[in-house]
Amino acid sequence: FRRDNTFNPWIDQSTASVYSIDPISDNRWRHFVFNCDRAGGWHELYIDGELVERKTMTPKSGGFNVADGGLIIGEEQDSLGGGFITAQSLVGALDDFRIYGRVLSPEEVAELHGLVGHWRFDEVADDTVATDETVFAPDGEYINTPKQGEEAAYPSPAVQTGVRCEPGQYVRIPHADHLRVGDDNADFSVACWLKINRNGGGQRRETIKKHPVSWQRTFG
Image (cartoon, rainbow, N blue to C red; front, side, top):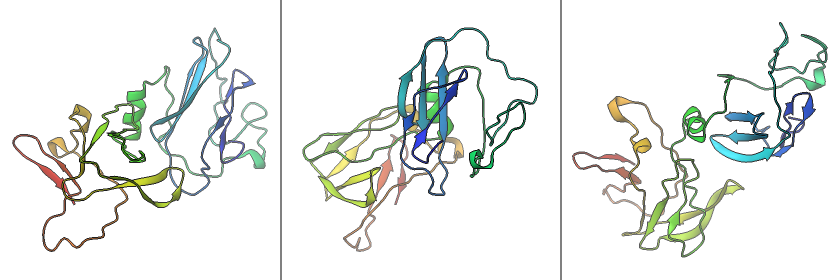
């Protein structure tokens, strides 16, 4: 990372194409995956389970060797195991650092990050499809035309607009095995921005319900 909005991989002693990303120096955790197919001539970057971009490179052949003591995490080395420069040091935190001997599939990347469904609700008026941003892509359907283009929770490129529901209006998500969260007492999380402008009056105002034949699970 030369800046907080660029990712600059260095492959086989040469600079690969630079990725432009949203600024990351905001003191919060993000999940990164970098795939490189040397023989196929491409590499790609994922952030938080979502593909940023795939770029091409000159195909490479032969092995990739690391000298004894030459694999360093958190510093840039100008000589084997040394030659560190303070200005090029990582200033941040790392966790669960992994190296694979193969390219990870989009499904494996999503599983590592833990994201199985992501609906931004950024569609414009009269759209009927609520697009899922994950690789699993169980796109939802807007039922009875809920209002689209609601003012977002906060000004950010990631949160552009929202959707407003009134009685009889909702978003229906199709069944998918990867959405069977909570089975066998497994952990799960649900996150969203929510703005309420009507008192429930003692009635349950359900935000999300997962309802198979014999049981149901409701959040909110």
